[in-house]
Image (tube, each protein chain N blue to C red):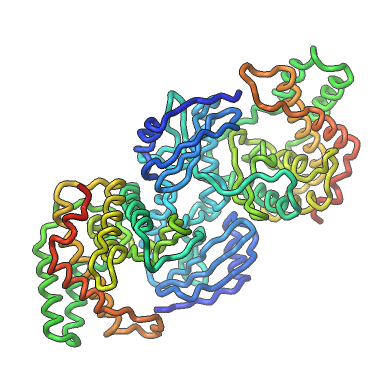
Length: 317
Length: 317
C-alpha cells in the first residue's frame, strides 16, 4: 500500500516520554515499508525502529509482539520490542497502533552463501522451537481458503492452461494429508529481504508481521524455495543441504516429514505465485511498490511437480 | 575469591540442550572473575556469557536476573539473560546455580570522556527509572549495619586517627536524615570497569550482582566519586556536570536531593574505603586478585568532608 503516516519530532518526543529510552536525538522516515510506516528513532539510550501499523488488528499485533519478545528472550537475533513504562509493548501514535523495537545492525543479502544459508536454517529451527512458548494463536490468512478465493478472482484474467495448473495444484494440496506434520509458530515470509547479516554472521531476523500458526515444514519449504535456489528455481545442492542440516539440528524432524517436503515445496510455490499474480492483476490503490514477477514462482511450482524426488538426497541422513 | 569452577565442553553442550541457542562452537574461561566463574560461550546462534554463581543464594540471583530482564525489556544496553526452554533464567551446572546471558561488544574505559560520563549518567537515570518495574526486593548488604561491623573488625589494626575518622563518619551518616530521599533499585557498583563502550557509545552496563534497593542518590554518588574525578579525588567539573545533567534528564530529582548529595558522596566514599580496608587487612583464603588501594577512598572522603559545597554549582539549574 505504501502507506506513509507523517509524524513530527515533537510528537515522537511526547510518545517516547512513556519509554525509558532517553532523549530523542534523530528521527528518519524509512521509505521502503509496504504495509506499515517505519521510522528510525535514535535516542541517547539506543537505536530503535518505530512502527505505525496501518493494517493489522491490535489482537494480531499483540501476537507478533509476543512472538518477538519470546524469540529475543531465548536469544534469537531479532528486533526486541521495547516495553513502555506501563508494561505494554503496543501503544498509539497518530491514531494508529505503534510499537518501538530495537534497531539491528546488518543488511540483507541477495546472493546468500552456504554459510549464510546454514545460519538461516538454524535460526528457522530455533524460531520453530521457541514458538512453543507463544500462547496467543493466529491462523494463516494466506492458507488453502485464501488460495481458493484468490484463484477464483484470477479466473477471469488468466489463460486457461495457467488456471488449470492452479486448480490442479489446489486439488492436489487438498488431498494431501498433513495431519501428521508438526505445527507451530511459523515466520511465513522468511525471504532474503527479511534476514540481516554482518558478513557471514546472521545479525537479525526481521518482519514478523506475517507470522501465524501453521505447518512447520511449510515454513521450511518457503525458505528453501528462496534461499537455496539458482535463478531458474532449481535447488543449489550445497545451500539446500546446509540449510536443511542446520534446521534439523535445532528442530529434529518427526517420521514422515522428509516424505512430505516435496508437497510442501509445491504449496509454498503456489502461495507466492498466487499472491504475485493477484498483486499484478489487482494492484491496490496508491500502490507504487515494484510488482514482483509471478512467473518466477510458476517456474518453481512446475519444477517441484516435475521433480518430486529432488530433495530426497539433500535431507540429512 | 578468585573461585574458578572448571566445566568441560561436553557438560556445557548438555547444559545448552535446555536452551534454544544452537550448537556449542567455542568455550573460553574468563580469568578475571572475582566472585563468580565466567565462560565465554559461542554457539551458532550467538555469543553469550555463562556464569556459575559461587556465593549468592538463589533468591538473590532471581533478583539480579529479574532486574537484568527488566532493564533489557526497556531497551537498556545490558546483558540480557537467556530463557531456558522451561521459562527459567536460572539453572544448575556443576552443582552451582548458573545463568546464560548475552555477551556484549565493547570494552571498559579507564579515562572516560565528558560524552562517556553523560552516557553513564543517562544510563544510571534509566536504571533507576526502570527499577520501578522490579518486584523482588534485596537489601543492601553493604549498608550502615555492615559499616559498623566492618569498622569494629578494623578497630584492632588501624591507627587511632584513621579509626576516629571512620567512627565520626558513621556517626554523621547515622544522624543524617534520608527519609525524604527517593529509594529504588540501585546498581551499587557502577564503576568504570562495569560499563562497556564502543567509542563514545555506551554498549553495555554489566555486573548487576551487587544491585539492591537503597537510596537512588547514593548510587549517583558512587558513580560521581569514580567517573568524574581527577586522580587526587577532586571533581572534574566538566565530567561531573555532564554526568549530573544526563542523569536528571532520565530521573528528575525531587526537592532536597541536591542538598543531600554532599552527604551521599561521603557515604559512598566511606563504603568503598571500608571494603578496601577490610580486603587489605583480612584477605580471603585463595585470594589472588589485586588488592586495591584503600587510601584513594580515604582521600575522597576527606575531600568531600572538607568541601561540602563542591557539587552545588555542578548540579543542573
